[in-house]
Image 1: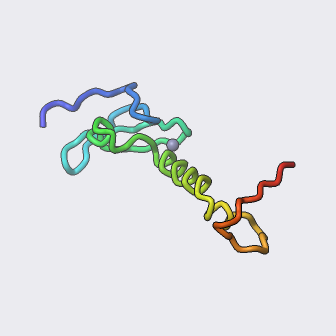
Image 2 (image 1 turned 135 degrees about the vertical axis):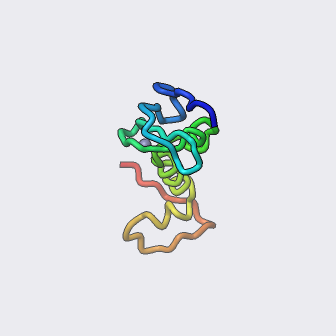
Image 3 (image 1 turned 180 degrees about the vertical axis):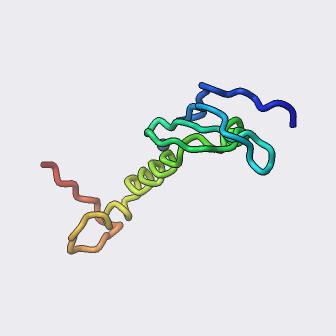
Length: 97
Ligand SMILES: [Zn+2]
């Protein structure tokens, strides 16, 4: 496999490689990475360099939250205590406080 590539300080999405912690079973270098959100993860350098891992997982969580918020059906369901079921024919009423 040759020498591990030094990616110290390089950014991959939200992650910045801090230090190499060892090798995975497949022989790839494992890197400790700092995520923008404050979490640290250890991941395969190959995954970083190929863009497979770009956050500690928070990016995916935020994306799914965005999907929920842009989906009117889910949005209607999230209105707690709403006595009327969601009706796709009616526009969503938004309370401006
Ligand atoms: Zn994160």
